[in-house]
Image (tube, rainbow over all chains, first blue to last red; front, side, top):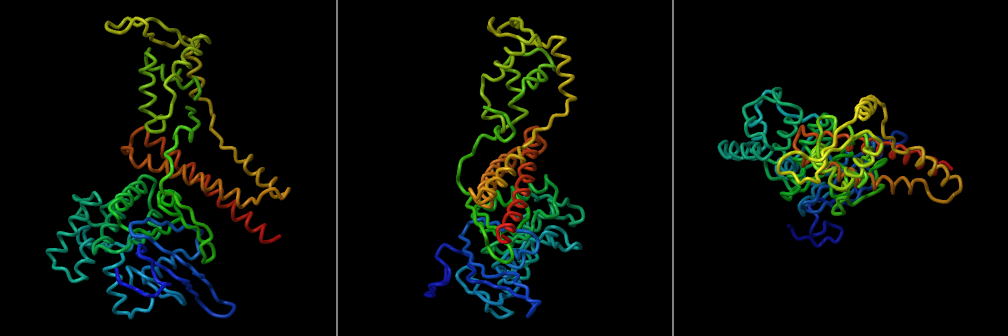
Amino acid sequence: MTDTTDTSGPTDTAVLCARGVHKHYGTGAGLVRAVDGVDLDVRRGETVAVMGPSGCGKSTLLHLLGALDRPSRGEVWLAGRRIDALGETALAQLRRTDVGFVFQAFHLMEELTAVENVELPALLAGRSPRAARRRSEELLDQVGLADRGPFLPAALSGGQRQRVAVARALSNEPAVVLADEPTGNLDSAATVEVLRLFDDLHRAGQTLVVVTHDERIAATADRLISMRDGSFVDEIGLTGGTRRDLGALVGLEG
Amino acid sequence: MRQEVVLAMLAKEPSHGYELRRRLRQALGPVGEGMNAGQVYVSLTRLEKADLVRSARSETPGDRPERKVYALTPGGQQRVTEWLTEVSWPKPDLAEFHLKLVAAAAAGLADPVTLVDMQRRELLRRLRDGQRAAMTEADGSDAALLLEGIVLRLQADIRWLESCEQSWTGRRSGS
């Protein structure tokens, strides 16, 4: 990691940091404080879920963390580098290589096959077509879709499309994967597919930040943050703990 | 667990207690892990006293003679039929929790938002346990289906708690 003497900057173990981050839109009476003073440290390998009602600012926050948008005030640090003040060229480069995005609506290129979708970020990052294809095939295998490479997104189920999108997000080995409502368009069974995949990524040490309405994702994260009106209002650590008797959950007494 | 469950498992064919237990375990998967081994036998004894099942010593060669095979009586058969069509749905006691908040707020004994928060944390932990178990089950298994139900119900309860939190937070700041 990059050395930094700035004490307000990231801690050693944090791969992603926000310090006093604000995002305001409009002025005067029309001022909207979409993100209103957020501090966040995401440790390497950690899965953090941010939950809150629609309009609480969680998607805006994710965009700020992933350099899709700039904060009105405050700092964002990724992998030891302050990113909120970078120029457009550096930002574009960073979005391609240091951050992987997963969206609710998948955002796959419909006219490209699964393997072509997954290799696209590697090609854009300047890898050779052969290396990009090999990496893409490995990633599709990793998400359990080795045999779906030649298929167009339209021929895949919702859960499969989202797994392709996750594989694409991993293409350039990003420091962090940012997911915005990744199960928002999925049924219950497909949600389990995506949860299993996130769990695999977590075991492999991938850092993951998910904003979601889905309590199932939130409950399987290491840390759950609740957001209201642009600010964090609660945080729950969910790691460790006991595996209690599941029978008690359905009234089957021991 | 209701005795009718044991009774209904027996409707397939006369069985040993351990065979009933095996089938229950299979249908419940990890949800049944904490089940007391003696529960099926206790139920069978009670059902026999109530004349809903009768038992006979095992005649299968190789079985120990004290092994009993249980079968439904006509009364037991009828009870199973009634039970299958009974509409009984387990109800989490929402009214009790709701009244706890109302009473706590009225008396100034505790902050309802804190109570909601405690409950929400507990349900999130249960949801995590249920979801983790669901993720390790094979798709389409009986146990996976049950775990999906557990997870969806917890999710609904957590959503209601979020409504409670918003409502009580609003009343607190409004007062």
